[in-house]
Amino acid sequence: MTTTRTGASAKDIEYHYDVGNDFYGLWLDDTLSYSAALWEGIGADVPPAVALAQAQRAKLRHHLDQAALPPGGRLLDVGCGWGALLTLATEERGVREATGLTLSRAQLAHIVALDLPGVQARLEDWRSHVPESRYDAIVSIEAFEAFASPGLTTTERVQAYTEFFSACHSWLVPGGALSLQTIAFDAGVDADGPVGAFFAGDVFPASALPRLTEITAACDAHFSLTAVRSEPRDYIRTLRSWSARLRAEQEKARQEVGADTYQRYRLYLKTCEVLFLRGDVTVYRMSMRRRRRPLTLTG
Ligand SMILES: C[S@@+](CC[C@H](N)C(=O)[O-])C[C@H]1O[C@@H](n2cnc3c(N)ncnc32)[C@H](O)[C@@H]1O
Image 1 (cartoon, rainbow, N blue to C red):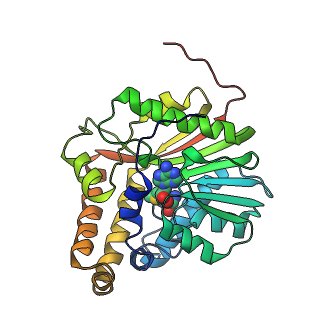
Image 2: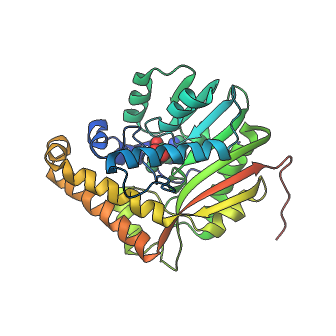
């Protein structure tokens, strides 16, 4: 399959993710999940560190449920971070094979060191991925934001996302499912204005947020959309938890990455919180069932 080269490159990804595993370990939860947790049912009485870990595991279980991973099945995680989902799938779901794709060498090294049975992490762009055989389930949690570059037209973004869904369709068994989580614009924000520029310049180089309509237009030919949850409050609580943990570890964090990088992360986490609070952005959890045959859409 030929795909269009857009979105974050390995160099762009490493700018953000290879700041250092020890640095991220200071403020993420013990699974090193780097995406919005799922806080439903977690009360204010639960101690903060326990609450974040519980909410992150709830998020991972949600995606494995939505992707309908059967026991003994084969799982693909596109954008696997430090392997939180691969680990939980192995420990709790009896997965036979779990493959994770990342563009970060630091993340790959971390997963390899975990030495989990049946887990294979690959330093590979999804555009180059060729599975040994088809997967029973695919999950992708907050990697989608890196699949299109800033400055593209809506049509170009839909084209880039369509290529992703088309690839997932070709990798899944008939009846297989995809569970996707992505941050997206949720208001009339100018994608190429200062907010987009801040993120694409200082935080996540060459990344750009999608809009819901672009995702639905892009997936329609290959997947039936079975559920969409918009959960901005999940991200606000996650970001507050990360900010509090980073602040509490500021001395160690400055030693790890220097004062400037520490300050940049404090600013980025707070800016994200404001954007979610204002309703400019949201986080979607989307469940998709593979269509038997791709639809030919006209118009
Ligand atoms: C925000 S992190 C999320 C990690 C993980 N899913 C989690 O929830 O903790 C984004 C991940 O997507 C990966 N990624 C981004 N673009 C990618 C691409 N084109 N191919 C494969 N992985 C990609 C990055 O390397 C990183 O692991």
